Length: 523
Image (cartoon, rainbow, N blue to C red):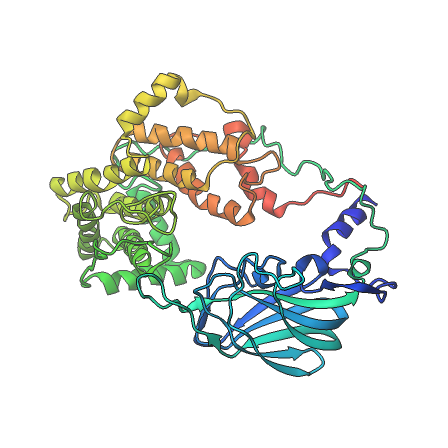
């Protein structure tokens, strides 16, 4: 019974029609509102666009000060689906109260029964507090007098926008509000049979996490610090892997992709994104950010191709990317803000993206460290001006030495400290930082960075993963995203003899298991 009541609460907006729903009222209500069952959608013409921060629902939310902002050339079509077929007496339009922006002019209203009504709207903008003689907000009304289940407003043209103080014409805008007024008793349509408002809104379904305290974790052999490759596999292990995948049918597609890409890039000229054009200024996935990511990922792929083939020309191309970034990173790429106004970056505009960009470059360096083309000067440059410089920047501009000193002052035993389970929510950003600290520390033979990363991972396993095995930020997309950082962190630590798979009774295993596990209903 409890489950039934919970489901009733959740589906109240999409319930079937009540037998008493035909009752009429003397006063009218706006059937377009979401609370009354209205649903708004938007179709844009080929040359029209929409502001990402203003959803279509803003045009029928009961607030004339919010609106869906569009730009470009009409048509722009709003569709309002009603909760069911309702007697609509009139459709009201309230213009925007932003005096300089565009507002719809010629509109075409299509009703679900096929009726089409054309209307020219007054371009006078609503003014906050502007009332008619009866003290009501000014509305432009279209009489309907029909039963309909949906309506569409197709904007065919706009009243032009005004000019800013600098003379720039405003070429965007919207409508303050659309109202579909009905005399039907809408409350009757929203009543669900057997609904009990006193029923509990939350039901404890039981624990979905598993107790893995008796699970034994077997670590691979330790790769000593200063051995290259040394993040994931040794040179001999990669050679064995190469022989295996050459004859594995399921591996052929990826194997051929690696070899073909390496062949294409052996003699290609490397073009670094222009440092004068910062990445992620308005969009985290802009062209500049994609160019940086593509170059870093190609470096990582080329590193693997070099290990598979031993082709020194491939190593030289990988070196060219690494050295090129090392030469540019400290000074040419300037710290800047972008789409995320709360953080900064150098190559990117936020440290999460910076760490994600850096990881394949670290792995590329691991692969070609001992290549014939690499000199001691190259290694010093890549380690100091690219990897360690970037790690310091990502770590709020604190070097490993400064971070260690700060942690020692707070708790001299921080490397072995235990953390309260389930407290906090973790951070999808910080786990990528930690993965970069660990792998960067490995290739630069810096145990401090490794320890900083390992301690951070311990804290994230304890606080980020909840008792039911879900990631604390409350989204399955984040849960999958976190795994992409946990794997490079935990695997790299394991090859240095640090076992965090077993930490807190193998708590990290629940991050994978919880998304595929269900528990029986306790009802």
